[in-house]
Image (cartoon, rainbow, N blue to C red; front, top):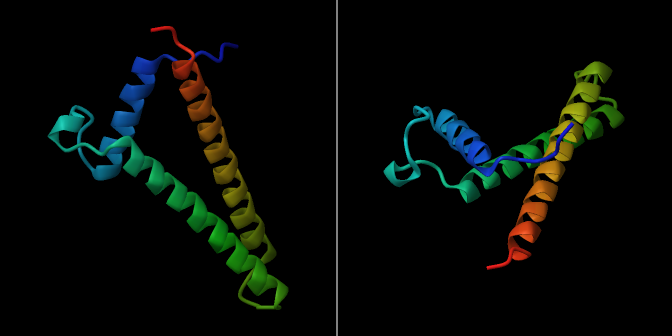
Length: 107
């Protein structure tokens, strides 16, 4: 299994995801109003934060004895927030590695 990432493929996938998130076609170039990387990254971080806040709210309600919160609902919310956090952590690690590789390149 190879851990190498093709930058062109990655960029194309990120542009397609950004276009899909905005409801546009994947052929729209960034110069024509496509989302920039920082906005997409911030949106992803906000979604992870929202999932964690939701699971914390459910956990607090369950601990307080709220009869409307089921154990299965709480466990699913906790797992969703954990998986989304771990995915964001892996993205951050890949970004840091890419930055370090770029900084170590000979010019």
